[in-house]
Structures are given as C-alpha cells and as structure tokens.
Image (tube, rainbow, N blue to C red):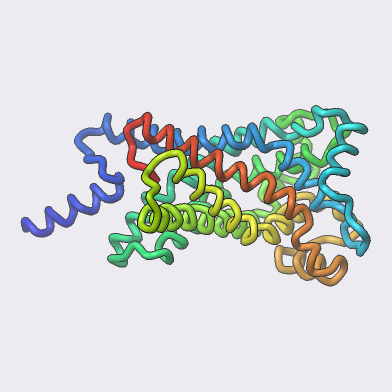
Length: 313
C-alpha cells in the first residue's frame, strides 16, 4: 500500500514538473503560468516575424502549376511595399496573434505534461519520447486552432479585400461552409507535429548536450545557441509540409492547378507540374522567419518561466 502511494505521488509530481499539487489554487496558478508563458512567448515572436510570414505565403503561392523562374525574397518584398504599401507586410496580423496565444500556449504547454506521462509509461526519457510528445502536442494544438490559420493565410493573400478577420470568416462560412475553416487541417497537423517534435526535441537535446560537453550553464547563452539549432532543424523538416498546407488553405487561389483532393495529391501535383524543388518554395523566407521566431520564443519563454518560478524547459 505504501509502495502504491509512493508511485502515485511520483507520477503527479512528474506531470506537474516538480510542483507539488498541494491545493486547487496552486494547481490553477501553475497551469496559468505554464500555458500563459508559452502563449506570450510565441505571441512576442510572431509580432517580430510576421512580415516574413506574409512573404513566405506569397512565395509559396507563386506560379501555381507552372515551371518558371521564381521571384526572390528581396524582390517580392520590394514589390509588395511599392504596390500595396508597407502595411501589407502586416496583413493577417490579428488572426496570427490570436493563433499564437492559443496555438503557442497549447503547443508548448502540452509538451512537458506529455513528455512526463510518456516517461512514466515507458520508463525512459530518450529522444523518441520527446519526439512523440512534441508530435502529439503540436497536432492537438493545430486541430483546435486551424480556423485562425486559415483566416491568417486568406488575409495575407487577399491584398485588395479590405476585410478584417471577422468579415473574412463570415465570407468563408457563407460561401464555402463552416468546414472550410478546417481546410488543410491534415497537413497542418502533420506540419505542427513535425515542427513541434523537431523544434522541442532538438532544443531539449541540444541543451543537454551543451551542458554536458561545454562550460555553458542554464541562462541566455545556452538558450540562444540551443534555440538557433532547433530553428534550423525544424525549418528543414517542415518546409515542404508547410507549403502543402498553405496551398490547401488557399484552394480558391489555386484554380490553375485544379482542385487538390488532399495533402498527398497536392504534393504529387506540385512535384509533377512544378518540379520537386517547388516543395521548398518560400523555404528561405520560412527559415528567415522560423529561425528568429524559434530563438525569440524559447528565450522569452525561459525568462517568463524563470520569473514565474517554473523549471526551465
């Protein structure tokens, strides 16, 4: 009986990341700090990197169904600013920030509980456990917040609409049905699973390796180097899936290539009509955005966790 009680106590302690669940107030405070710090970190990073997200979407939608030279990042940026004005670089910012709070809070917030449950279930904390935990938290977060992503990319492409997020959502629902808000949810979940697992597992492993093999200790320098490594790896892993997700969410803007039935059909169409390298359209813009975003997210998140009295990631 005493052994069972001890085992239960260890499980609860692990899931709460070392915080004892003494009473409901402490538990609620812990949850608020835990998910709140994650959401605020991702929102801060999004605010800085949103223009690069607009450029990435525009690049991904270039020459749909055609083989031709692509416009580079610098040229398309100058074209947008010249034709549409600097404010065009912030199209879709409202749904992007809304998504960051919800998706970011869930994606990062669910990682640690998932990791501790997996560790307890399999009795190991190896990299595969971290990858599985990241994939689960990323997929669940995206499934719940996909409508905000659809609104974001629609507004980023509809340069002349002049509509806000609410008006755009009403238009989508009235013309395409409410299910349209979940367009591309499959590739979006795959992308989020790949992103979160590669990002968080790489960050986690990089931190441990740097602490073990270098003089670095928990702090800004360690977080900066680890997050830079994580941003590079996650960009390489997720760029093709991100491009497919964008194409599916913008089906109405992809008529020249026909209707994509699903993510696999979209990938096949892109490879067969535009060449395999087309899967990395917008890849440089994605790296330019995801690299700094990952760095800012982890640095801010670690600092907020420290101020809240939580353990580092």
